[in-house]
Image 1 (cartoon, rainbow, N blue to C red):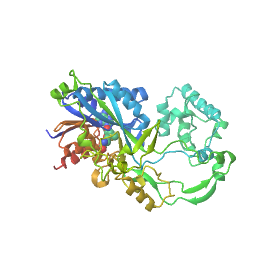
Image 2 (spheres, rainbow, N blue to C red):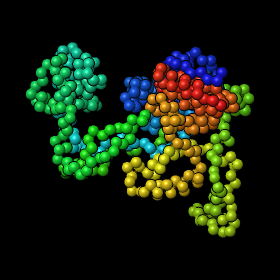
Image 3 (cartoon, rainbow, N blue to C red):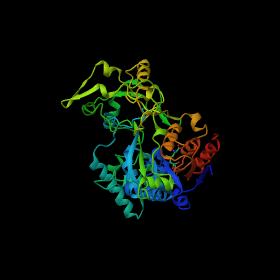
Image 4 (tube, protein in one colour):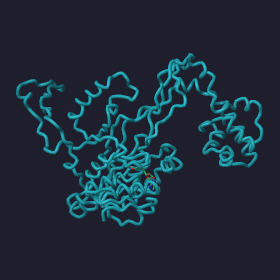
Length: 455
Ligand SMILES: C[S@@+](CC[C@H](N)C(=O)[O-])C[C@H]1O[C@@H](n2cnc3c(N)ncnc32)[C@H](O)[C@@H]1O
């Protein structure tokens, strides 16, 4: 066997695979954040449900993995504690977390001064009064939220229009939605009608903002599609309140992802016996070493004395060079993506203050010196031109991770195969591969990519 790419739900397919039959688990599961509204990334009803769902699949992966076998499981910092909990609940030991740092993430922060000026309603009690009226009407008429959603032709709107204080997230339907809801609920009292506004209408303060320029470019995008700005006006706050909050936001720029390093407990009385029986239990340190160009100065010229340290400038120290392993530095739990000048971890996308030359210079100095694994983001050529998957991982990264965990000629398992990057990486490293994907289109893309591997 070279590879087997199953089409179907992981939980069902894994149950058909024999116990102790694969050597490593390298996988990029959903994160439970509903990325781009995609169904497969939804939270399954909440934290507990999502963790239980992932744990059920990981329990099967644990059975299929050989004793002592390692896994690397991708997670987003925001929900990586969910992923780690599911892995522990499934019986894995969590050994480490590799942090993968990149500079191309786009901050999804809401500018608070704009939010204040844009808001149609800032009186929460009033909004809850409206949702209370809609909730009572719904119950009087024996209707459900699903029926309200269907009437308004939207998913998940009714839970906001009928939200209960104090924890619900209340919202007043727009004029367009209300036109449809009214046919079910009947006319609303005058005080509610006055609060129902068209979707394009923004808060009163929005109109008073001073226009100071125009945005000229679309920015960002996922899967090759640029986000297009609907409002290109650059504005400044004018009210006292929004001026006070200028420069405040709600989120940080994403610049790191996690790979959680896990292990199935060894079954033999020690690691040597386990390796002898199953070939699993070790990490391939030498195959994962980071080649370093040039000479590394020895740290021995730091002379520790009296609880502090001084820089030793003696002849002996200046000539001393760190004795490097011929294959490079010991692999660490830190990885950097370098795709272009803007991927520099020290910069933000909006930072116009440094010239491109300065950035290029930074990289010239930065790259050869820092002993971490680098890899660039995948381009269209690497992904395959018809690859429409929104979260394709870099091939070089996946080769590195497979190589780190899998014994020579062993089998890599990926129960969330997507467009098959783990599999392509495994085949390039001359491993066997077992992948599972439930989406037919992604599965077809993965098959095509896997068939294309010629080594
Ligand atoms: C984050 S993507 C993996 C992307 C992949 N690393 C690549 O480079 O193309 C996760 C994939 O898991 C799949 N998936 C989600 N739940 C699944 C399940 N229960 N069984 C099988 N596949 C599933 C989704 O369809 C999605 O393609």
